[in-house]
Structure formats: C-alpha cells, structure tokens
Amino acid sequence: MAALNVGGLGEYLREQRRTAQLSLRQLADAAGVSNPYLSQIERGLRKPSAEILQQLARALRISAETLYVQAGMLDERERDEVETRAAILADPSINERQKQALLQIYESFRKENGVGAEGP
Image 1 (cartoon, rainbow, N blue to C red):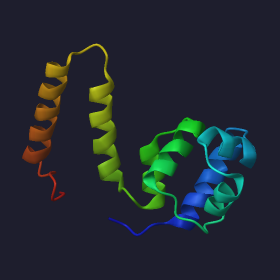
Image 2 (cartoon, helix red, strand yellow):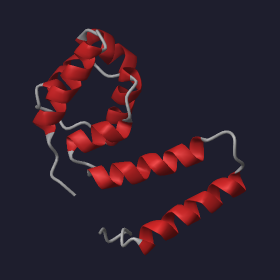
Image 3 (cartoon, helix red, strand yellow):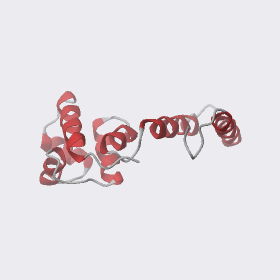
C-alpha cells in the first residue's frame, strides 16, 4: 500500500470542489466538517480519515474509493475490486443468495487468474 499522498489529495479535492461549483464553506457544510479543517486538507496540511473522505465523497457525489486512491490508502487494483463487489451488493434486482453466489464466482475467477489477496 502506498504512503499517504496528502498534497495530491488536496489538489484533487479542490479540483472536484470547483468542478462541482461549490465554495469551500458549502462543501464543508455538506460534508459535515469545519471550514478550516477542509481548507487544511486542500492545502495538504491534514490527513483526513477514511470516514472524512467518505463524507467528502458523498458531498461531491463521487466514489469514496477514488478519494482513497488519491490519498494513497487504496491502490487502483484494490479500488476496482471494491467497486465491483459494491456494485454486486447494491444491485436490487438480485436476492442475497444470488449476490453471494456471484461474489464467490468473481473470487474464484480472480484466484484462477492469479489475482488474490497476495496480488498478481
């Protein structure tokens, strides 16, 4: 796992905030964090927790996993796996038993292709 990339995360957050046409104060309010704390994150002075990143992602309407990757908490491969699992679990058109079966098949294919917990 990579080291935390706080500066890159701050730049990315600022870019996402501006794209969403939100002021610093608006995003801080929407995410439930203080304005000064969000400012420090954007300037690379603070390392937010996964929970804070999740709140920011929700307020920006982006994937929390994307912010985890930007922060160095998750690598791209891990993000893809997490998003795939989340998509299966969130699908309302299939029942719980079917979701578990799909996850088992998905995991067996990953192992067959040499991509397991130990990586490729």
